[in-house]
Length: 435
Image (tube, rainbow, N blue to C red; front, side, top):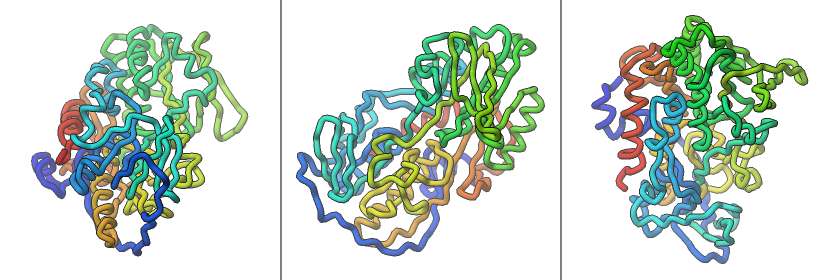
């Protein structure tokens, strides 16, 4: 495959956090219903819901298509985070401050920022309502609301984070607690979990485990640490090539893995975690921990669950090749909030954004979309403070690799890409594509 310099420079190349693979498809034409419009205080040609990576990227692309004055983003948060780096923050390898910018600084110039939360979607009338009661109408709607962290579905959380020895790399409020728990570890069980729900960055729950094991070795505590990975899944990773490589690392580093074990309760005052055996419903067991990293259950945002755009599980119901909604042809989805059957990562968003840009541009011209998304996603599996296995794959769980070497091998070069190159490309290229 293409060397890195070609990947960065070629407009048709695929680099997992900035660029994309292109394909072709045949799709039947759909009749838009953009004539209906509720009484609204504001109207935009393109309305983007969510100011995360998908929302900002698509707003930037739509600005180029229809002009900045015709695009708006609904996003309540003051800060925008590059969350993939939180794995390294939780292991003490990066500062939390390196992961964020002001939302204002990443919104494309001229695009309207509506600093509010989405309260209701009304796709039959081509409008949405915000928490402040504002109604906003649109001609085209892009839904990029991300995924919801449901810590409260675990008994004892989130209040348990007030205690020491427990952290989570999935929240800005708790990621530094992971590093504190790692530093304070003395002797006993270091426990890492994976929930019984879809999650974003499905490799992250075990990345912090490998980093913790490396930290214990580095600080002379490894012989006193019993490292346990309790996962609700039935396998360590969904792609066999990379799963085989990870299993070898697990054997070499003497890590205990328990499959089909789902965290249901944390007794933080007693340093106890309670798990249910999913193969034997109702059967539970308790593990005392010296350190606990929690990956929370996750779900589609509540506002989507109760909206007409959701499927039966609450995710935005889109065509997996074009990202166009299956019922509402002027509605589109991108990223973690969709029901696309691929791993929810920033790399997937990068790939999806190019396809969605082309889909919308053709829909705007009353033409049939001709490009298709193949499910490309990427997970840089951090296995140490200077090692990464770069997993890249598609809808069929087949490797879809960028580089001309075996990416299932741990490499320093891939770690440097994860730790340093990808954040730079994210802030300076992916979010600012023709901004």
